[in-house]
Picture 1 (tube, rainbow, N blue to C red):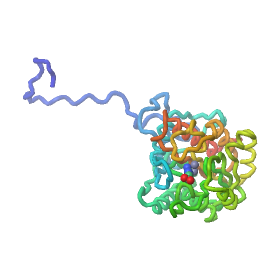
Picture 2 (cartoon, rainbow, N blue to C red):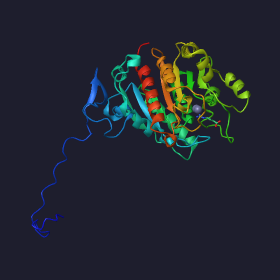
Picture 3 (spheres, rainbow, N blue to C red):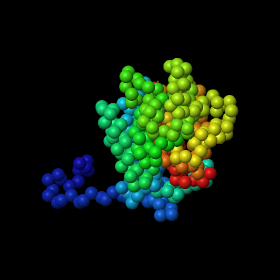
Picture 4 (cartoon, helix red, strand yellow):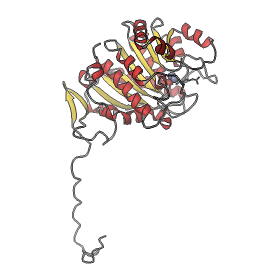
Length: 348
Ligand SMILES: N=C(N)NCCCC(=O)O
Ligand SMILES: [Zn+2]
Ligand SMILES: [Zn+2]
């Protein structure tokens, strides 16, 4: 109530005027960049990029486009971790950090959102209490989203989700080449007797025949193992390894050549565990290991897939509670951006 003594008394029966309309538009229906008939990100020269809800790169939601060539989808889930939790909050964190991405990618001389229709499919609803059901839900969602020909760029979530994602991809393409960026092998057998965890997805995938065993490679591996047998098992399961130390010793170009030679022109699935980066570049993750790649090295390696047949990709293991200044979120958002750019058809 007004403190002005001459103001209308409270008992005055005159109806109060309608409240003034909200000045200016809200972010709902904000203008978007549109190129070549493709609906792109919110135009951040008209609407501040920090306003409104965050989709990946401020791209349209799936329900705002007729069809999508590439769908960015979140898989918030962390019931498969062996150490620090929190990757269930990864999708939201990466989307927040992705607000600053822009439509032209000079490193690949490409406009990914003009080359292809890219949209954000939101998050998969995943049971946090039942790991078996969770894995089935991720696979079902991946199959459903991919049914119309869309390829998926999935934001995890812990690395367990790579197994159902590969099941969905292999159902469509047969056994695929996998390039796996990670500090870890993730070809271990069981933890506490459990066969499905974030340390085991690629062993299960190999056993299930989802992988082209002549074309899989880990990149950036390092750190202590349980025993030498881990490496023997890993080789038997179909993987070569380009370690973090080899990249340092032989150079990035040699690492890229070896990686691409291994894959050839096969359909390839790219899985990026953000802990492939040194903890200095990505502290916000569950099982950090010293001595990793820089974000510059990782991004260069991802760009080298331009012109290849990338059938799907993920970036996993972002655990925001351990992040600082969005370092890990920013790195992961750039990883996803480079992957979307190569999937959109940037030329090599
Ligand atoms: N996939 C990730 N990030 N980590 C796996 C580590 C498994 C272990 O604790 O031995
Ligand atoms: Zn890892
Ligand atoms: Zn991993």
